[in-house]
Length: 117
Length: 303
Image (cartoon, rainbow over all chains, first blue to last red; front, side, top):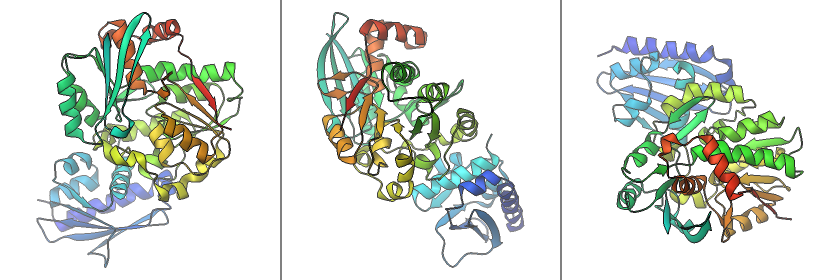
């Protein structure tokens, strides 16, 4: 089990990876979205916000989310650190993403662009 | 008579059956759509296994190529694995030969592809041979893989960048359910109006639009005489393209009784003619056979 602080650290690593990638920022400049990241085994919520291609992270839930990402704390930390890709946990149900299919593909795409090889 | 059946995840409204003679052999060629129902496709494949001479898989890719790397689409592989006895193909082998040749043919025999032609390929990882041929002939290319599959307004302009992004994305994205990346079933009969509005300018800026027909159709705005290079078109599709203002239709596969079948069907026909295990068939085998069959792209002027 990961702690809330570990999830925060993983999201900050994700943010750093994203913001270093100029091409990714160009690719997402039309995609303004608010993403709630929620652990289902510990009390932990974070907000990812994409606006004009920039990504920001903060602790706590947003008033309204376009996408909700739910998994156990360990999966969330692994995912945002890039130790695992989202596809497998998404396909086996460990990771739930609530939102439109287009947005889910886009989120998958972003994580692969940051961490994928 | 040899029997070749294409089992497609696409709409059953496009089903078709013809009898033709090729190199002295009679063929019954048919297409059976399963309206996006994956389980029904598996069941049908199992029923046909061992009872027909070759099977084509339609409405889905099993293999995607970028450069020398081959990516396996998980859902496509599941369908292929349902067939144990009959040779089964997805058209990717033929795409790498026939569609490459189509581009060279158009340059040599028509005025549709002069140097510097602006070409939009709605998706290129499913037609890498064609993409390379366009690049080789000096066309200005826009690959719409990210635009149309993922809604990301990022045009890719070089084969090198396409390969780089494919290497990063496809190993994982190919594991997603296929319907998340490609229109299946009923989606093939409608247009995505939001994306037509948002991304239609890529079509209008091009002189030639190439690629999978369902993708070409789904995002097509009103055109102004552009050439469409694709396959699997029916008489209704030709009417649709005319209505949209396309200037010319080129199909890479030959027409049988008003219908150009998908590359998966044609590859299945070639496999049935070659009578060699699929793994042993080389691009040279396909090219020799295509030459003996005298297959040429079909060019239809729509204006």
